[in-house]
Image (cartoon, rainbow, N blue to C red; front, top):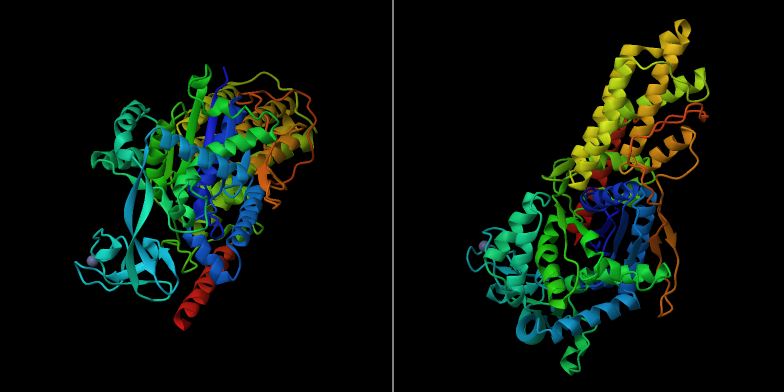
Length: 599
Ligand SMILES: [Zn+2]
């Protein structure tokens, strides 16, 4: 029976372009996972959107001399283009500025209030007189009361590691203009995590420990052990979702970004259902007490800095709301460094997707990010390694195998030749290629995507070895029938590998599918749709129609199937590419260094 697989992707913050780390750790793993489940015949729903609120966006917009809405739409459009180019197959990628999302968030708040999961309390806010506003901790610096370090941040000292409140700093000031910061009392709403802790514990004890990653479980348990405290869900700022209460002091406050962004998983599902013409269909994915709920599994994909919001805060909110499907697995990735150094937006030490997405084939980028994913430990993007893996693995091992087999078949037969009797060596390879479906599939289901890719590539290596031993290109002149059997065996294996690799490399697998003589679509790509929201603004989304016909099985290409003229699937990269790209990175970072010095 087919399962319902909900693929929730952490909402990218629309405050800057996407870099390869975002794709490697969050977007690509989610896409591979969703594509696999569709090929497996399961109903997958992959949802996310741009996170558009919060102080950092208002500050960036001010600096750029545009409105927050303009800034957000600029980045949102760039995200959509990247996802379309790379083939990130969202069923819906929307944003948090929609009327629908505002409505769902406010309703969520009402419901949590009604079930006593929210309380109001006075907080101390950091106020700057020159800017006439409250500032988040990240925009405050001062002298550390413990070690005298002069540039301690509002919430933590980077030198001695002390955690503190901003008012404990000596000479606290704003990092935006250096002006002094004073402290004022301000009312806020809090999510009562302490009250929800017992139920959270019960849920955490029931999760399938064999599929949760060690980092995620460990981190969550440590948090819980310390005892949970209430967390503020509102902020003093005017860019965000209004707090729906009849209280004038809340006129200048909005929901905190993390509160509304996680609710986006539900609001986006509601939007998706509305767009698909079945507005009630979202309930099948979220209402825990439907007869189908045992078949729903929700998988969340995020970076490790987002763990507490997905394993504590969001489940607590869902428990507080009641009758909602809780996460089945929360898959947090580690970080990706660049040429051995931490990626940094402020230093411009990053590979921005809009810069490279048109320079390389999408599957070249996808391959490197999947093979080198920061799955259970940090990984590094190195341009030399990018070139090497492309030439040796993607092209050398897999691309050449497919091209070699197709060329042999096309030149000598023009179609899938009729095999003679299979020998032991043929049979062995056919069996291994059939068994790969459960091996690769099992690894993907437990979100071990890197190992799944390795397993598929090992099959390509094995097939190359088989061809080298059997030498059909020599036999074709002396024993055409035997050569035909070997080439047919090769075609079957390449055809099966196309399915095994399709979640990772949808563009090239689709091309290969066509070269093998098929007509239909296996690597469907998303499309950008332009729509106008209730407020009259155009807010494009990413969407797509994806089939979930069960193809995850060892098929055998029909004998006599006509092939199309073969063409190589991947481009070789010259050795100097790595040096040129590194030089480009250094120049890009120097420009920022000079800018900083000038300030
Ligand atoms: Zn310190």
